[in-house]
Length: 183
Length: 244
Image (cartoon, rainbow over the protein chains, first blue to last red):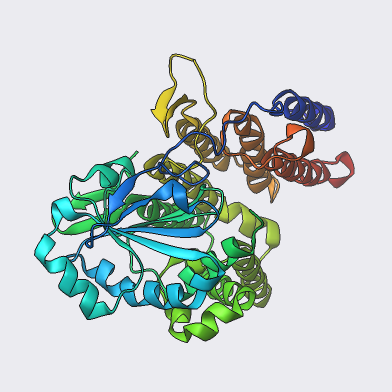
C-alpha cells in the first residue's frame, strides 16, 4: 500500500470497526447465559440428587443461595487425596458464611468399602455423596479426577478446575470472592 | 474438545500443554528469524526468559496481594503450581517492565526488538487458539448455521476454530512480511498487532461468552478496537512522509 493511502485505510477500518461493534451488540434478552445447564463456567450447574453413605439424599438445587464447591473424586486418586485437607480447612473456615463442599465420590470407578475409612482418616466433615452409577460423573463430563466446580449463590458454575491438588489459597480466595457477591 | 489426554496413568491437561507448546515453538520461531536477520538470538532468548520469569513472579505476588487472608491461612500456597493463583494483569505488567529494563540495559532498539518478537507472539496466538479448542472455553454463540457444533447444551458457532483460522492466517502474514527487506523498524509488529486486533474485533461477534456493557456492547470488542486504533496510529506515524 502506498504510504499516502495508509491514513485513509486506517480511518476506514476504524469506522467499520465501530459499525461492526454496533451491529453485533447483543439485543436485550437474547443471551441464554446462565439458563442452559452445562458443566462449563457461565452455565447453570446441572441438577442431581445423590445419597450420602448414611443414606441421606442431597439435591443440588436445594442448596441455592449457598456457595458450593462440587468436587468429584475417588479414593485411589493421589491428587484427590492431596487436596482433601485444604478442602476441609476451607470448609471449616467459611461454612458459617454459607459455603458448602459436596464431595461426589465417583463410586462406580472406586471401591465402596474404602470410602468410609478414607473419610475417617482425613476427618472430613463436609457431605460426601456416592455416585454409584456414574450418572453425575457423566453429567458433568468428568474426564479426569479430581475435577472441581465452583458454583455461585445463583447456581451458576463460575469456574472449573480439572486436575489437582488445588492449593488452599486458591480454594479460600475463590470461595471468599463468591461469598462476597450479592445473590 | 479434548481437555484431558489420558495416556495410561498419565492425564495430560491439553489446554495448558497447548499454551506451553505455543511458548516453546514461538520462542524457537523468533530465534530462527533473529538468526536469519543476523541479530543476536541469544539476547532475544534471554529477554523472553527474563520477561517470563518476571511475569510468573509478578502474577503470583499480585494475586497474593489481592487475597492476603488466603495466603496468611496457607503461606505454602505461594509456591503452589496452581495456575489459578496467577493474576494475568500483574503478570503482564511485570513481564513488560522486566523486558523494558532488560532491553534498556542491553541498549536494544524498542521497535526492532518488537519486530524480532513478532513471530513469538504470532505462534503463541496459535497455541492459545488450540488451548481454547481443547478446553471448550471461548465458546461461540448459538447458531442454526450448518457448520455449528454441539457444545455446552446447544448448537454453537465453532468460535475456537474461527480463532485458530485467524491466528494461522496472521502467522502466515507475519512469515510473508518478515521476508521483505524494505520495512521500517516496527512495521512487522504493528502490522501483526493490527491484524490480531481486527480479527478479535470481528470474531468476538460470534462468541457466546462476551462480557456485556449497557446496550449489549461487547467489552472485548471495544478493547480490540482501542488496540487497533493504537497500532494504526503508530503505523501511520512510522510511515509519515516527513519521516522518510
